[in-house]
Length: 636
Image (tube, rainbow, N blue to C red):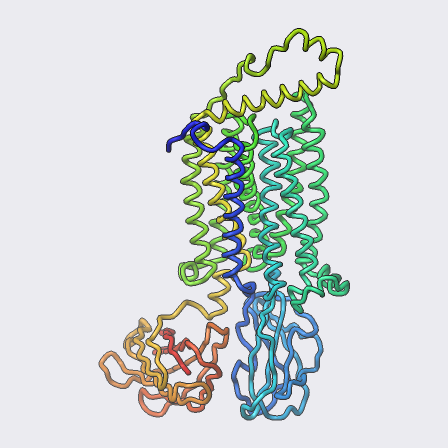
């Protein structure tokens, strides 16, 4: 990497403006692309089953409808609604009953007695344990399917304009946290003289303002975000009160209170601390500010940990403090990087010692990020198939790749840091000799003396900056830090997207296990052929399945099992299930009857919706030898 003197390129004034414009453009582009492709917030708790099942046809009216979920949810009075074919409520409109047992999360609503035959619609909406709204609908029929006049809203919970604004506020809040915490840590740990630098003060204060404004927006929009989706409901006092009674609402209020303490911290840091000249007193105050600021920063980070991914799922008691450490390390690294960029471009006084101290802080942060990130990845992904086969896993791979790029660029920055020097500014270059007559007139005019003192100070700062800018090592460091900051913007955006994406472990559990291999898709009758091996004696064979007519509605299903010798093979047990993973429908069990040796059949198998259905087949060849195989087939 080569560097040229400033005189051969843009002026010193234009370069920081160009850098700031570049970063602002990059931030807008990245967040715009991410938000454009994100759509509604991904469901973090998933519907894993229901009774009656989606598309089921029951002979008699059930007494209640129950729904099962992959993780804990919060429900209200109208979280589960059952509507008859005319659109009237078929349930008793009471609050759903919590029927959960152990790790199984299940809720139910009672139905009116004597319900007539027809198709009934179940519409549900709840809040996942990690604060994200979820919703859905499905149908079942009593006696026989019928027409229905029920028209459900096409917009998912957490979608629409309110969802977009709420997501923007979420992204902005993370950015404000990084600047507030990282900028403050940079001043206290790396560059104490930076407390008097106006650009550093502006960076930290703007971080505080950004985080505070974003938190207020999220608190006001929380009610419409999880409910009606209308901006007007942001000022509904009853709705706001209900939000305050929830875990996410309590976390947002706690964050605002902690931001009040952060405002006091900022006032001391850039007021009393900046003016303190006695080294011993300043050292004591540094320790006090570090402890107090660390407590406040930890508390703010905990408001995310207590209300999002870390607060639910396995090992929550360990995951929450690990998540706090992860967030603090991100802020120290990326916020410090932003502070270093501002210091290099906007202040002439930062020395090589401060840059080297930040290099040590950044290395320590990366070590913490690696340790906490490995644990979080294991907890949220859980398997290699989820790492490559789910959106969360794919975003995690992208995040790791960006970190690798960031570390590579940081390596170049460390090389430039090792070459830094602090060129002295000659005393004769920082002051101008005044004519004797002017000195005499100045002594008689205090206002003129103050004006000349300001001019000399500005001239001195300009000369010092010109000398520093002429240093090729410092110029190279500025470019490499700018590249780091650009990658960090994208990394922060991807990290924020991970918080609104269903974890890979949960997605796979909700889908019923490992992904299946795809079979050729075609309309009309479905013909599948699947080899199996239960591992026992005479445990190898082939399953052949025919589904006719292969469309939505009633279908006839035939299953043949051939042994390894190609002859019909009887087995003690055969089970089938159909799952439409894209719509979270199923698994719908099918119980075929044995017709002849190696031949089973089931009639009137109801397939409620067209799509790419996964067909699971469980074959048991002995008391202990069993295997489940699956394939996908296009139906409808």
